[in-house]
Length: 301
Image (tube, rainbow, N blue to C red):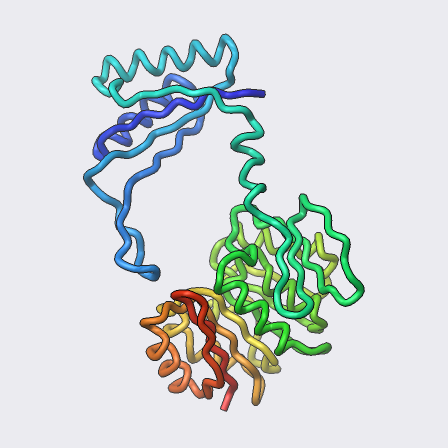
């Protein structure tokens, strides 16, 4: 099926009004794209009260859909919002499938291969293959922080180890640990959607008996008992602010001489993050850089 994309470019202050008009005349869900500013890579986005917001809905490209689109345009005209209203045809595959073209088979370290679920790959005997569908969750291997964490896990994980992944996203790191031979892998994320995607990807990789994913985080938000036996490896690909806040429980979750791998740290916060890990009882062994990002490896002292 083809669709008509209806877009109203309106002052941000009018975005809610425009969305109500569009929803009322199409009966469909409406998206609002609001301009924002971000001081740096770690800062929260701040929505802009000025500028232009984009309000969108999609209707079927048939007689009924075209009538809905015309009705919405007339309503925008009556509301004085029609100047920035546009319509364009969109083929279903354009917005439902085209994003997949950006994801290809990726190689990491010596053996890890990440294969998008919609692509074919002829694996070599020593490949550690991860089949991945990121869905709406972060983690495909394309980002520098994920790449560095995967390569650190390949060096660190040995058969029989216990691993925990904090901020699991798509589950790529947890599944890599399982494929590298970890006996138990725990994965946590504050976003239920990420936990769902991690479970689905674990199933696709036949590691559901190894990978356990739950909603939660480190510290008071641990969704599983970490007190009985420490983890051999703890990995957290999040951001420096959160790593600093969670430094103590992340280090405390390690077994004696266990290894902590953290990334999502921008260069200017490298030292601050290393200092927080040291205060929590870890000894920083290495820092790797890719562009603006850092991956820090430390062991429990």
